[in-house]
Image 1: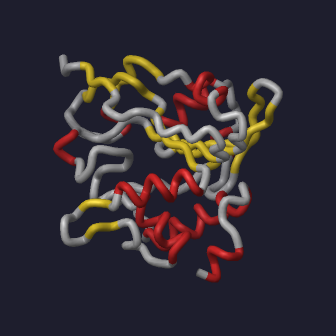
Image 2: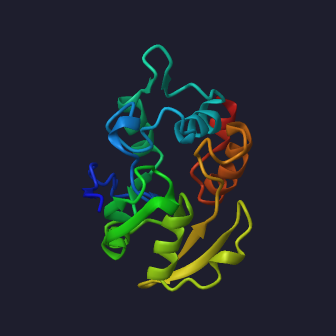
Amino acid sequence: MSEIEIHPFEPWLPADAKLLMLGTFPPAPKRWCMDWYYPNFQNDMWRIMGILYYGDRNHFVDLENKTYRLDELKVFLKKRRIAIFDTCLRIRRTTGTASDKDLEVVEQADLDQMLRDLPDCEGVLCAGQLATKVFTEHFHIENAKKMKMGGYVEFPFGNRTLKLYRMPSSSRAYPMAAEKKAEYYKIMFEDLNLITPEDYGR
């Protein structure tokens, strides 16, 4: 049986975050180009952000060293009120890949505490099928399967009503250009007022 892996990164939870982005679990370290979220150089998440906010897919990309500009990313995410973590704290890789279908969930993250720590949070994005499954089952969100790409469903948490969004995966395995994915992400960012006319003017 494969060994249990413990989540390697600290949660990124700015206190005033309006959006919480949740993946399932980081890929194996051999696939990292940096020690942080979405560390696979083939993943398009940080290119999507560059396209959205700067009109440049390589804004956060260090092409020479084939990595990302992590310090700039952290400043950007804090300014834009974006939190990041994953739905699982401990997992087993049944085949050694990062694919959701090959992950066995050993321990989930404390999703309730995360949302309590983010009192201004209005939206959640679950990146990937397993992350969505873990989240929707935990919060008993029964109509999530009916979501259209770029859409959302509402769910209650305490005295708040939050939105769970469906967006295309940032993985290269998802057959869609980063520019097209950014068009869907733009819908979510506009809905949460996280992108402004000034951003478009650049």
